Image 1 (cartoon, rainbow, N blue to C red):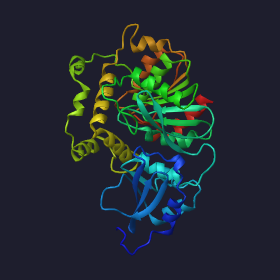
Image 2 (cartoon, rainbow, N blue to C red):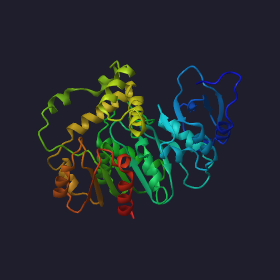
Image 3 (spheres, rainbow, N blue to C red):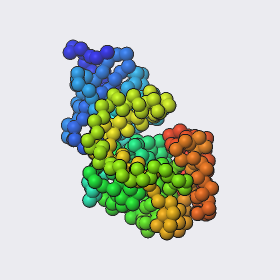
Image 4 (cartoon, one colour):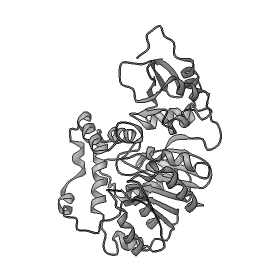
Length: 389
């Protein structure tokens, strides 16, 4: 139910928006309209312009992001020094449409002023701005998401490891809020250079890396090519070069990712297909992850980047001195591989190939699918703490 013109905003929402801290909020457009929904009661918009935030009646047009909770949860958020992050982690508050802006508002209204508080931002590089979210103090740990994902997939890792590390979850080029240059390679080498460029911009000499899926492949590439900048590597179901015959390799080489610039992709059509493919995509982390994918994919540049990155994952050369597996055997950094026993994208059976080429690596198989840090966060982060200590 939307508010009428005679209604005043609830006091708890006024208190929340009144403590907005622009220094930890990042909007590429420097403005945002975020819908605050009090379930069963009313809806209000937090309107951010520059460094200021104010409450307005919910507009008729669609907001940039939505935060949804019942009145009791909103009251607890207003009282809690950590704000909405606690409620979000417990599933009491849902963030939809745009996690970068929605969770960014939670961070900006938390009233937490301690060093290492959650902060959203971007760093300038030669290819453009790369967006990130960080939390914590201590040795830096860069987190790299998978194909079609964003830094939001590592929000559980920020919450779990911020007490011991400065955790920085990055939007890789082509994804999330980061730059999406047309014609960029979007292969592992290009992505690894972008990670190092982000470290330069953040004045980080060296860091641990954790990567999921495509992000794991990027982390490995950074470890192989820039070992002086990389410490330990945690690989969560990493994309690795296929060893079996790639029957469609010739066709895939002919296809050009730039076709995504011309493809007409109505969001309702794509959304219906994706939600049928992703189990449980109507609520929780799965629904938020689908929102993040769609937000980028329905844009021409986002589609081109997605196709280019997917193409390179499929065509990743396994053999020869320049091939993935031989280069992996020369890895100089300690690695922990965490596999999902039920992963249908990167089967845990790849473990035996890694053991053959990189025998000193550590391995752990968990009862999960392709995204361990979201599906089994307690076990994943316990293993990470032990390995990074």
